[in-house]
Image 1 (tube, rainbow, N blue to C red):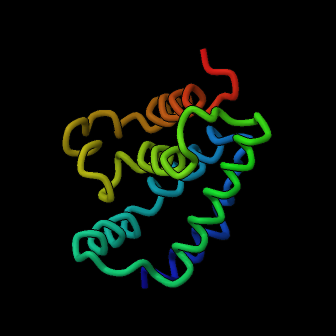
Image 2 (image 1 turned 120 degrees about the vertical axis):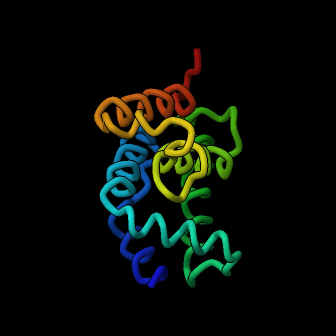
Length: 133
């Protein structure tokens, strides 16, 4: 079941290395609209199940895309690309069952999804811009 849904996620949520804030926004919207899938992912992680087929390959492709954008100067190279991808995904899913902090420590934030989305986008802009302040 998880593999089926993750394959859909991979095709629906294409990475945009040149616009990580927009990618974070799409991941956030998807995660908030699919709480059952996020719970399934959390359960899978708790059971230490192996990654579904293709997940590792898709992740490696995304990391390579980010590395290329960093090499081209289109993306902040302060952080390793794998760390950057993990950070963006973590921020975008922080207020779902897949993350132990957002909902449990700050449940009121999820009541205003527009403000939460805006804050996530702004943080991703800060960490991904090619010319950090």
